[in-house]
Length: 295
Ligand SMILES: [Zn+2]
Ligand SMILES: [Zn+2]
Ligand SMILES: [Zn+2]
Ligand SMILES: [Zn+2]
Image (tube, rainbow, N blue to C red; front, side):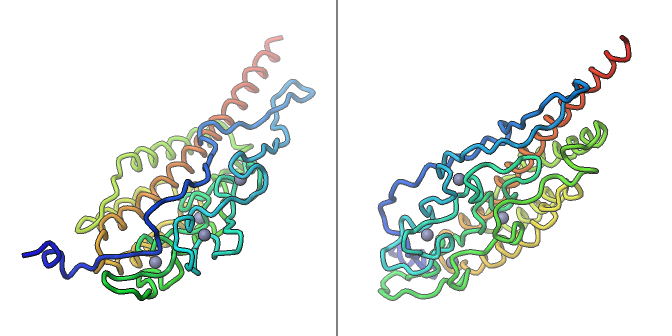
């Protein structure tokens, strides 16, 4: 029996990719725990948040645009790309800064916990190109998983790449020590659960999806974007299941889970770090207030 007949009825798949990858532009995110936020001392000697300093994004050198990472490896005749729509320059919105050219005020905006600045989730079956070719065929057909779109516009950020930060009262910047401490503990819980999550495809896919959804829900009362994530993630998974007649299905299923897990972790680490900075400011002010009282 030949290898081919053993693998049947699985279809071999040729997506839009050509064999040799061209070097992608270096995507440089700010490490989620390295965000800084300037403070200033007011007349009473208390630390207040200063205006946000706009730092130029090193990935796009301030232009907000980058070379499309998705279709850099497509055949020239490809017409669909989920990221750049195959515009003439093959130019996409910068994923590191969400297209601003500088980093948004981290007390107000963060990269999306689902797509991490891409604005979409890529279809693993066609790799974002929207079309497929079976073995032995020289005709392209529309991708059966994404219906030719190359992926799914992110519903968590509505394709905007940046989302709101933790919803604390009165705000992340001005929340009290008690509010921050409580929110940080919940964030830690969610991070611990996500850290233990391993993407799984094939027969374990549905169980893994359930687990990831549960993990995403742990801190959803603090983070509105996480509340929006499960529904969209489940939709992407249900479409991805549509490619099961093609080889590599388990990997594709794991890939979507991995993207969401990593994006959510990035977002939560960033949020926790900002809360730590907010807490530091309050603690410094409390100390100062105590010293002033003693005088
Ligand atoms: Zn940028
Ligand atoms: Zn493209
Ligand atoms: Zn597709
Ligand atoms: Zn998004």
